[in-house]
Amino acid sequence: MKAFQASLPLTLDFEVGAIKRMGEKVEPFGKKVFLMVDPFLQGSDLVAQITGSFSERGIGFVEFYDIVPNPRHTTIDRAVEQVRYSACDVVVAVGGGSAIDSAKAVAFVAVHGGSCWDYTERLGEAVKRPQSRGLPLLVVPTTSGTGTEATPFAVINNPELGLKCAIVNPLIYPDVALIDPQILVSKPPKLTALTAVDTFCHALEAYISIHCTPWVEMVALESIRLFAANARQCVEHGDDLEARARMAFASTLGGMAIASAGVTVAHALGQPLGAMTDAPHGGTVAASTPHVIRWTLPVGTDKFARVAGILDPSTLSLAETERAARLPDILQKLFTTLGVTDTFRSYGLRPEQIEAFAQTVWTSFNQDLACHPKKINSKEEVADIVRMCF
Ligand SMILES: NC(=O)c1ccc[n+]([C@@H]2O[C@H](COP(=O)([O-])OP(=O)(O)OC[C@H]3O[C@@H](n4cnc5c(N)ncnc54)[C@H](O)[C@@H]3O)[C@@H](O)[C@H]2O)c1
Ligand SMILES: [Fe+2]
Image (cartoon, rainbow, N blue to C red; front, side, top):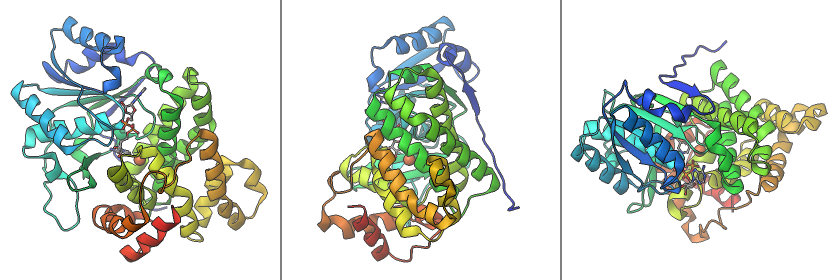
């Protein structure tokens, strides 16, 4: 068996109603909270419950709602200034991946200084990689998609440079993730579908990654099984608490899988598309995944066949090669059923931008390309795959 290391340096608190105990959870970490809340929750009972639980325990708080999808480096830097100015000693985030990634960066940069952009990984550029943790951080995901609560990544968008890059550092894991399926029942169907597809892509990409280990394989395959059994139910019957809980677990597992094995080509293409067009993250990876699989085969046949068998058990009677070859079509049909149908073109990438886009992928997402099981040798090859995604 392949040797491996696995570490999950945070507490996962997975329970319906967990959010009600936020004050109790925060108490050991600090006295004044910088509360970063996804703007869709502004003025909600949920926020009132959280802040009420702080007040009951004499914990101070400053609220911050200035968070957009594909979070901006400038907004994160502004939040850092506020944390320092108001002398907050703990960060709490409630929201989607954008809110949680922002908070991961804020907690880190508030201690180590400078701009968050300087901490992102960019090929050939100087990158700040501190050796100690930031402020304590507690997070509550409101989407089941990114799994960011269980990853050492924070993805940041720099619209001035047209780049989206990630802080990659094991010291930015949250201290605690409260995963409360009750929060998820009101998530709209389209967002539910987009984020569920992101989860699937994490699990698939970690599973096929050259860094996949027996640990990652176990975690990723369970995530894919949970996605297969629950994604559609969550989209069509959002109030099914059990399906929501299982999809939330799939998302966390997807995060754990990429934390160990990284993502591969579909994310390397999806992330910069999100940066250029502000397209939703899940939609961007859905738009590339089936094409990336077609391009990758026959490399990875055994793994793609296994995933095809989970998603469509009727293919289990087929030979492995044929089953693997069916996976792109199975996925395109499934994504269509979920209502996730956009392409690179429909998200706004223009043919004349492909070369520059491929250069960005090559420079900013080289680490992800390097995880792919089929080697990519040049940015021209990246451009060929992008053309397939049109
Ligand atoms: N750090 C990681 O490991 C990691 C992994 C994958 C993706 N990401 C990043 O995460 C971001 C995407 O996060 P996301 O897919 O969770 O979406 P998001 O956080 O960008 O949110 C999308 C929209 O949905 C709204 N929203 C969030 N939860 C909601 C709910 N329950 N009900 C109604 N509206 C809600 C938000 O306000 C926002 O307008 C991207 O920037 C992506 O690059 C990070
Ligand atoms: Fe993702």
